[in-house]
Image: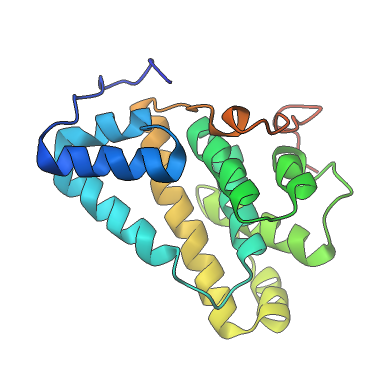
Length: 196
């Protein structure tokens, strides 16, 4: 577990805390350190969890594309917790693990289709400050995915920015989900921060 959070994790107590810890252990095998940090403001924790639960029910866009987009945001922002957790989730959802582990170096990797590359580029473009998504990129994705899936993909990327940036700012780091289930470590870029 991460011990370097900028706000020390609170003890998760009470009936609501017991329910949350039981659910976390059942679904994740452990209680993530991030829960203790967010426990300081239970309204924020419950709202973020509620939004996350609703996001998981969206189904207009391919699950693998959404997962890869979220991981691309996490890699770009530097959220080791989100990258680790989404890699773990990709495994649990039977997604392509060769591709999932290549996300941090997707530009160098030959594992991705042209559509997946556009989705990953879109995730990065939306994550830039100022966002750099172009009319051409959106038009290409719209043609390939359709309007409903593109709106969903865009919202997933925005949600990924919401969660990853909060975790990074609070110093929440990986809890080792992927390692705990025996997944190979994520690939690393050969030149950190390099972009064509």
